[in-house]
Length: 82
Length: 434
Image (tube, rainbow over all chains, first blue to last red):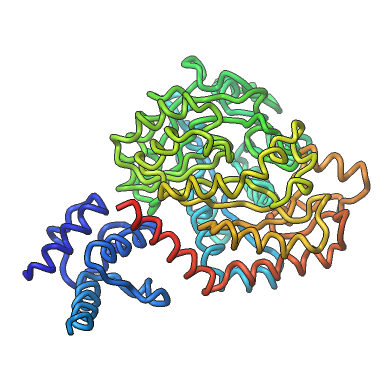
């Protein structure tokens, strides 16, 4: 597990107040953690703040797995690298 | 002895155009689905009031299919809101034709008891507390009376209170659970058809009882989202703070309905956020003070209206979203109200909005006034009491203008662009608080 994935799991666990110990990279977080629509937005907001990224507004509903979140973080971090 | 309690609940839109529009409107559909998926707290309370030696089965309308033979019960209890009351009556008639005695209860039955009595062996008017235990005893002894009047006050006193039977929901796929913390509301808005119509005074449940109910509800369903099924939870700020301090350690996510004065108290707002409150639904009703003149006997909402924007900001700044409710078709509304509601929604940055049309539910002061003024479109229109169908002649516009304005407002407020804008605003608020 990469440092970034580990950090992501910690952030999500903190905001959702649930353990992500058994959550797979491709598991649907909304279903897995039983999130309502506002809780899902809070998770995204926490990821944006802690990782300094921004999800495209029109695609917020598409980010539902750890892998999708990591891909977005990786993608935006690479763009930031000169 | 076995009693079957059958619930009819949920929201519906009868007008095909609005229904079609509703399907494409995420927020409206979401809220509709949530309401439709809530269990009947009233019948779970009736089950709790039933003597322990009597077997109780909790059923919902979809469980009772027309093509199947009816499940046998010694006594059947049916509860429904106004919009579905005709289906409730038809179901009651079916049970009675099959030789099973039927009791009808609930808000509509309390407001139109004579009508309900023609479809039942007995009716329960007002709260089930003080009525249902007597009714069961009478039925057991073969002396069922045609009408039982329940309590309008003191329903949470130990001698009358019974914990709702949340255990009857085991195995049902509910992820939202309702718990009642109070009954009634002193604001007494003219159109309100909620629990204030079956109470004589505002009543609050002792906090320890609420905590016990939350534990019981959690034992029946895994990680439910809680809806406190009140009309005005935080009317009493001191009680509100005690309640919030008691539920904070429980780690809930929850929703409730209250009035805008919740924003007057910073400590209360902080506790609200800490306790896991995700949304409060507030009846703003209309964006202008003049629109609200006469809506409640003390013009409370009119006096508060100028501070709506500031209050919404304070509440949402804590990460608690406000579901602002507007009623169109009030007597002081003209066709320009639709544009003004849209403008207010944009300025206020409300994170959730509910638009409904004024509805004269039977038995309400609004119903009696409009009937006196000869403005009801039909003498009986219960299936149109959906909150989205126009059932009376408005004063400041035509019926057609009201219907078209409602459709326009739906399109303007419930569209993907607006939905995304609200979501982004919520995320920015959350980020500021992290």
